[in-house]
Image (cartoon, rainbow, N blue to C red):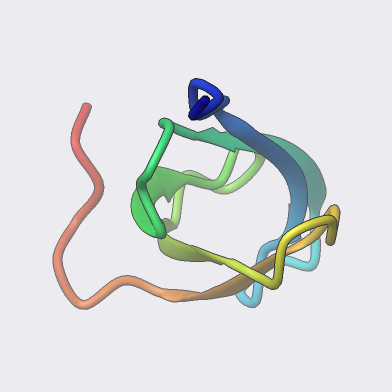
Length: 66
């Protein structure tokens, strides 16, 4: 029996200002775009291997929504 996928919660560190915060990716989503909660820089976050609590983070080439 297949188990339903859960969203992935983890932390990120903004490469622009160094602020650390948490973010969440939707189930089955390997990456996403967010804004830093401190400096509002557009960021791309990517999931690491299963079980890891941190995201890989880089400055987004396209601005984050919202």
